[in-house]
Image 1: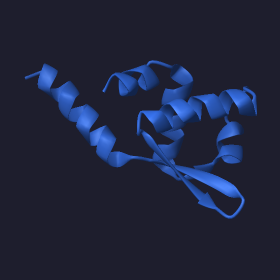
Image 2: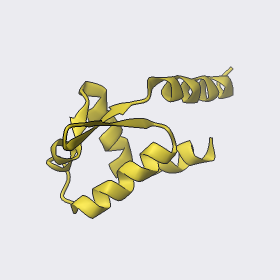
Image 3: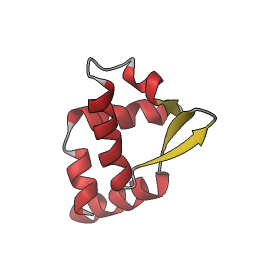
Length: 84
């Protein structure tokens, strides 16, 4: 769970997750929304993958990213337990 909180602690990664809420995206599509290099974006995506917050799936020569909804549900349960 520590890796999830580490991943969520960065604003760029949170914005990537917000984009992926709308639709699955390739790295190129995601990169259009940020003024960062592809290397930096790959680093952020790697952290999100290690935290199991996103799923990467190769389709031809592109890798598409999508949200891992089950991990989000688990994180929400933890947050809600603090407010009971």
